[in-house]
Length: 377
Image (tube, rainbow, N blue to C red):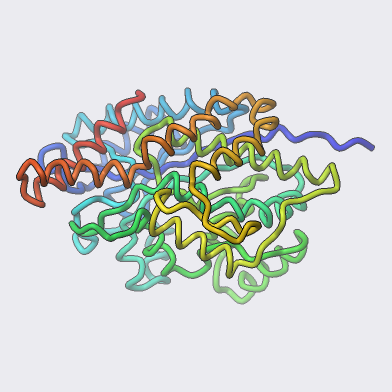
């Protein structure tokens, strides 16, 4: 019997930080803001762990073009409602200068439990991410694709990196966010499972012991979603520019279809040990795109532009079938123009060269992030 091709539906979740438009420091989301957003967007918007955060989620979309319309509506609504309270959203994974000690978690049962379970680690979770869901109805396919797609996670991270600053200092990393998130349990690269039943047994073991309520407390960089029949890529920093978000989502969607399609040809992408993949993950965290990544087949570091060309060639057929080839090919623009971490550092350098103080230069970075959030709306 012929295998039915999945629809590879797509869903995007983004977490934004809210800043005061005058001081440009982080600000608490007032109750009126959340009420107004919920009245307009219903269950597509929700508070996040910290009171200075807000989370949005697209509908289940059949294409990246459909996701663009939904994401534009979501971003525009949050920005419009925030403006009424003297606030502005930014889509960056770390605020350039606000301190985590000054932030407080949202008074909600799930977050109260999280604060209790994680202790002091939770206090430092002043980070935001972007998640991409791709529909795969067969759970065995989700496990099979997860094992292979893990190889490409460092590539996605390098393009998305938007957290070079932490607590008013340049961290020296392109994505400082993951150094914070990796302090949590059940994070990092997903382990290898060779069947859905093996994965389920492992999850059930810690659920039955009472360590977690369900698989939603598993926060790997890539996982089978606990709520939906999807594979969920969680590696990316959140992108200030909406079109960058859509390019990353298109790559995840196209790679998923590509890897699923290989199975029908009795082929698969080589599965490497996490020891090697973690080295590439670190390289992407530290350098973003600037120092290339390791090509594990060639056993050498390859310029990132070459890796992107190879990735586009790999998934071109699938991107064409999914109607997102233009968005996939736009990855070249990200390489040419730099990721958000590169742009933030350039804004900071330009301000310092113009004899601004460090504090004013960092505020300039926040202004830049506000402008980029609004650019595609």
